[in-house]
Image (cartoon, rainbow, N blue to C red; front, side, top):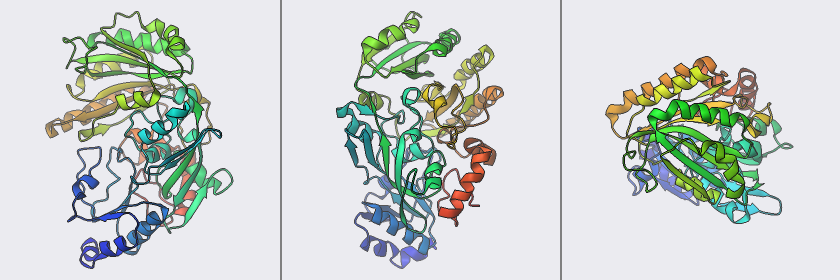
Length: 460
């Protein structure tokens, strides 16, 4: 079918009806347009529709369906599976739809479906406002939100989906609908963790929170200090206020001025502390962790949007990720976590991460399809490397981390943190009760399963 569409001038017909651009395999910029964050993914779509507005999206969806083309939706392109690009199919590319309109009086932001966190954070920063977003500025707002939306601000402001007020979608039959608490309420519920199963979201409206100042502390030690550092960090977070977020992570120590030369390029353990307030407030709260004989430190008050950019993950590397959400993190779990750090591909941008949850995450609505929100801890092996020869090692490390920590798992998992790990894991990311309800919503809005290049929900 793909070759028939190309030979019959299908892309030209699509191009004539779109305000945005249409790119095919023979066009300039095709390779750049089809590239995604995960360098393992090298798919060649038949056509890429770079949509400029919701009408373009509706036209592209209708074209794909009428020509029997596989359909994918691209926002930030960060998903580890690379599902944003359909092999031989049509890509609905939303990146031109990245506007952000802030209403500081109402405390809201209307965000285009193709916006990244940089677009959102830079727009809200001048007003001293923010909402929970991803942990890198290049992450797409759309996929992040629809999967639940975890980020540095979540212990204070909840998940990104907790702050979602409404969404505008193009459904599989090219209808344009708005979903909120009053209009299409079941669809609106499904958008809080059900992923991109129900349509193409062309805009989101979020509630914002005052964030006039933001502070961080980044501390580094040699990897050998890990077991003691991990225990102290765990115990500290047990009593830390909700204003404190961040992570503990093993990483390759970077060649930055604040890092001692003998640590650069070696496996190190670090603590990143974030605080939703100024440095004067944060410093005494951070104090219990500042006396652990760390080898490197950065302690500063910085604009939140700047912090997001500082922590960007480099594109183009080969990626494999996974996660486990834990009911507890006792000494035995801590020791297993630390021991597995040495299996990570090093040196590389890989990270062996322990995230604290709790706070506003745990206090959020328990009826949304994010069954992992009750977990106080998450481990996230986040693998990035250059050499294909490291693929087996990188995958084995991530899988072994999850196997080791599974005895303490709550059973649920954040689907944005994992790839295609099978039906059991997909259902664990939704919850059994939620999965049945989501299947009914899918049956109403996408009965033919047009949107299935995702953690797919089969329509009831």
